[in-house]
Length: 290
Length: 278
Image (tube, rainbow over all chains, first blue to last red; front, side, top):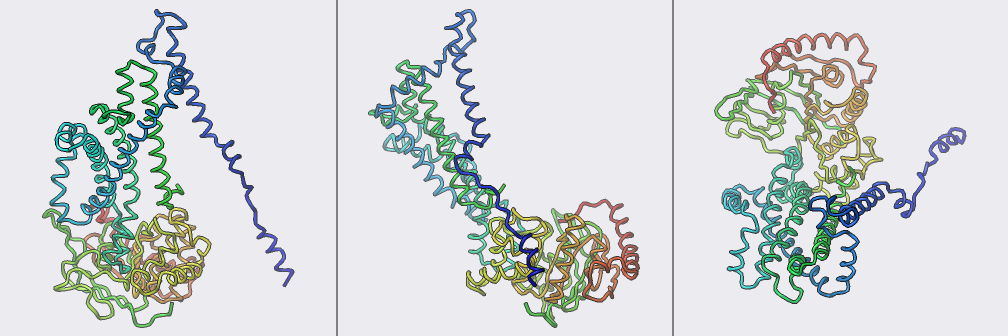
């Protein structure tokens, strides 16, 4: 008995893969280092391009490039605005607008898209007007909403909402309609009720499209908020947001601050899309594997 | 899973199915009749796109039929006055490309039927699912998602997902089509083992003649579109069968018999050059 058991337990001895610490993983993450290197190289090229005429004289100037402030100047301007509350208020105002418009669009867009997908009567009635309104760019709504809504803030929120709403609805609708009929048939054969079908098949089957819609919608929201802030002038006392910050820097003739505002928007958008990606990964564990 | 007796007898009587996409009538099944006894493994062999799947869809309740009737244990599933059968757990389908829900783990997939039917509370359903998956030899990947396991494992899990509902008939639509020969042979042995345990009636569509003879009690060769029964070959090789069966003399003779019937139809289908029906 023991004679037989021994070799088998020996063979089954677990081979534990060597675990790497978080720090080791970070150090060995080649993609990360390549990304960092790429940004550094980009900054160096930018610096060289921007200082070209300064170093080599006007006759060697690369057309256009010489007018852009070099990153070192931008960094200096950034350090200057960092302690100012107005700069952070701009972040706060823009974020508030983006998030409120975006969340409203998700809250209304997901159920609306799902209703369009599952109910033929609902689709017959609501899809045609939706399709006529959808191609109107959010910015075309600016004058009308400035007239319709009592405050500037409300019209910005409304335009922001529109920007994300149509994208989210279209993605949800497409995702829900494209669920493989085999899943629906399998579930129905196993005795799923209409509600089971909706909550356990259609909803999880649509999740990937919901997150795609959210990611695209978030991008559009930032575009719209920035444009709306520039057009409306954003009121006063720093409540203007990052769009107004850029516009104000332009009016004040500070090239460096314009670029500071632009990069701030880039970082803000990056933070938002990263958040959406992380939430998506958390909600869809089966998607993480690939 | 208890061995079943006298349940799962299918009668397909004079079934005709005409598809009518935009007024162009396409006859997929023409006056097709077959009797499948309770607990029989019935293999349907025919050229691509001949309407075999249409027949399966009619039994499962996915599509309507135009004429004729289908009965399960003497009860009409569909027929005059009721062109489309209700979908139900007594007729479980295993699909051509697999239809495990990608957003559920294998165990959750298997437990789905008992949960939505309210047969078992969630916890017990999952427990039973785990047991049955372990019994089918895939106890080590219970908590993986279908996207993480091989096609062989997911297909096996799908059969378990069907069996947990204690179906009268298992409808398989070329479940092993895309698999390599080695995986296929393992799948066959596992299906035979499952069958010997449950004696569930199996309605199995395939192109693969060896598969048909190796697994089946009867092989029904059907014609190219429109689908009609051309020939029925009885497979009298005793069970349990093992892989060596395939090299026996009687197996070879049966192969020749089936091959002859199928080949004629394959040539007709090829010459017709028609597109496959869904």
